[in-house]
Length: 159
Image (tube, rainbow, N blue to C red):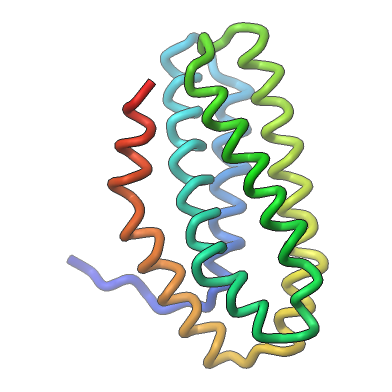
């Protein structure tokens, strides 16, 4: 099995953001409930793993730097809102009007979070964390996602 290339945490978070954007685009073009279900399941898994790893690795590292502490509370609130929305969507009829409305709200929430992270938070982080710390955090971020994968999949299976 090939070892994952070491990458800094900001690059990993950006890659997750691009993945979510791609899945949202697929969902918008989905024809039929089966494809929509696949897109939702993928979003559920990706967003939960991403949020968990950020909360376990990225936010505590930000807490260590005065320049980045101010961003944590809002980011955590956004994560909580998304997690609640994902759990609510799990029980809705795929493709129904309520599901579609919540999917639109989910996308708006995620795009707002992504914009804030990439335009404000990353700049602040780069100003106070060195390359070595960002690389270490990247390894921890990947490991955290790996540890939670089975639990997230199990949660998704409970409908």
